[in-house]
Length: 215
Image (cartoon, rainbow, N blue to C red; front, side, top):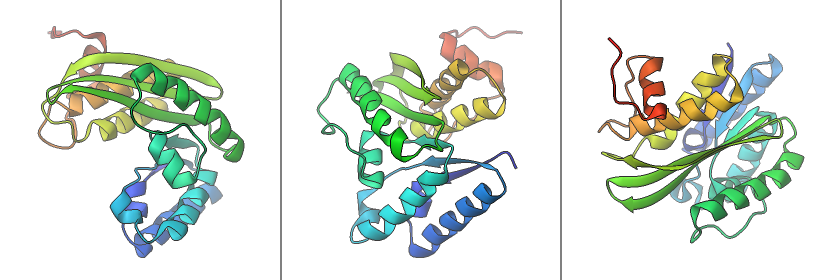
């Protein structure tokens, strides 16, 4: 197996699912399988279980190769030091995310890739959508671009899925974030929580802003 992907939603769902994710991470680490962990903090899951979940998330993060989450996720799940969340413009979010990652990297040296999405809601059907990725000290940023949204649910997961796909394909890191960004955009054009691309070319057409179909 090339990679195991874990979600903080499942890890925090119950003590049993948390233990399952921990054991899965330990086994993957033992056998040299890469681990991806999307922190996905949810306040309702963490209420009254902060100490338990903090310990579990920190252990999973310590053996992970890829960590995904926004500023709040890293601060609330891992106790990372960072600027006050919320109320910032997109550029401030980019700068503060970079600043926070420098500190987190010291505590989690096994992590080689950090990633997050950037979203600014203009209206329910118009968002500014961007992304940041750090791989082995190299920053890759997709400056927010306007996208048309049918249903925003699933955009973040689409980004994660597209990014991991690109990593597993062995592409250059610059393409990881581009493919992830476009996969997230695709997901927001469906009423389902996931995108349904016909092929890679469909995703790349979204990245290029090209509506033409090759026949």
